[in-house]
Image (tube, rainbow, N blue to C red; front, side, top):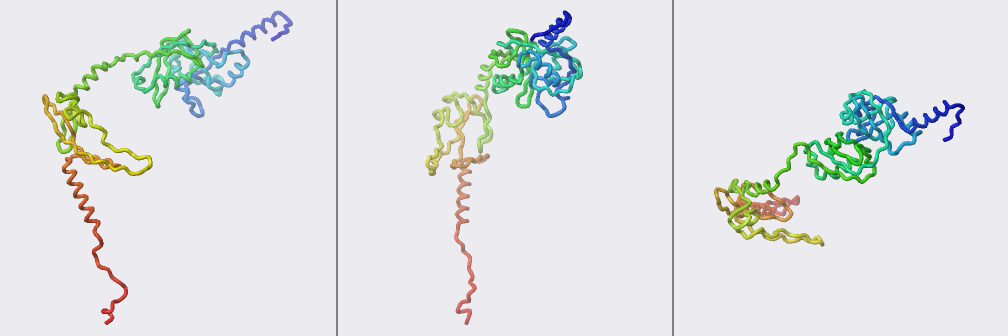
Length: 342
């Protein structure tokens, strides 16, 4: 721009105006998002704030880096960095997530200094979940990648909050590169996880050995509760379905379905015998009594042996046959017979 100054003082004032336009600084009263009127914008699990429209008017006349990023400084000297979501706040106010207020150590209505900054893109981040519940997520890396899209920048040493399945998780930013505050917008950043505080890696080998040595109680129809040991000296695993001394796992005994839709005859399934052997005070199951299988139906029979089930089926068939007898009553006609006329 070209300035025509009538005096040396005017020239310095014009140059000062240019320098001020390169940096935005303003003090605002800070409130959490819960105090903001209007619809809920779900800002608690993100790193963006709401600013007044006057700030947008000033920033639009400045040569700043986009997307806009700001440094918030409290009166206690605490610093955090954030992006901006909307410019719809009341004059002199900004609305920020509650976790950000905790990092700044401020209360509702406290004054903070807001200034625009230009941050370099991040290349590395080491994070530490503050709860072991975060490790129970099926794919924590995918969840973190999605939730970090709600942030524009990160600050080393602060605790951010992300949300997943209506539950909030606190994440400590332990280390950042190349600087202590970086931009994470459209960047390829390597993320390293650190175990939560107090977390002890479980001994999976010991757990597997304990599970293999433990016995599982099983309820056999007509015989009550017994124990089935996963390991047995009777010839193998000693598991259900014919394993162990019965010669290994049983083959597939079901039926298939035809592509043309025609029915498939259900095979006649043999009833497995329920035999058990006692070894060291532990009942080892070699086979479990099975009821006849009917294709297309699932039945759970409890407390009856295979013989009792078979007798009940015979009784049901006999009852069905007796109900299928033809009509044995007498009929009547409206016409009178010849003998009645006489």
